[in-house]
Image (tube, rainbow, N blue to C red):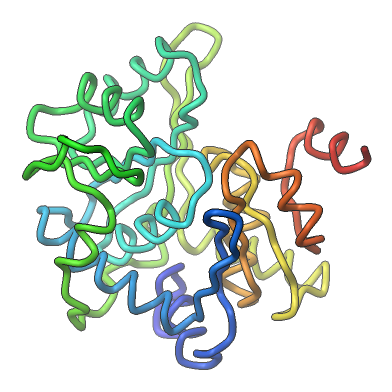
Length: 269
């Protein structure tokens, strides 16, 4: 592989197992499938869209959302352009979210719904570009755009990934006990190495089913779900919502789940 990064692993699977299912997401109680080739096509369009908004090498895309496919695809598009994805748990207390966003002063934000868009607008730069997942009537503007609208206007332009193995792929921001902001960076080469190690140790293959039921803003999700998915090339599933994740998990019966103590207690129940 020319460069050991997450976008390059995506390209690898799109070339070697183009028709296999890379991702499923549930919408209105129906599972929708996306092949590795289709996934790459959508991400390449998002690369064009982000570049058109001015996103470039070294920039940070803040993800203020629960687990959903759009956030994952935008993360890979941002990394494709040499940038960093910074997921933040939207269920944090409002004061904590404000402190984190004020520290970041983001220029690019992916926000889930009305509440997250409002938080982003209140705590971002005046010229910040905000992409939202859920339709929000009356919010369409040059700086607040719906994900699907942005995607529809983009072109699948051919451009090589600018990501390098030593670049940060993700950055996790949190407050310590003194209410000071701390950041932990995860480089491409680090995530790929840990992902491949887990795949080897647990003998994971392309037949696995993983469920992305955790918030993105955890090292566990990055290390034990995202990295193995991209290195092994199995199927990643997104629940319909954070509230339906247990029902969706029971329906799927995934072989790979990353969770908290509460997650496993619910699984046992």
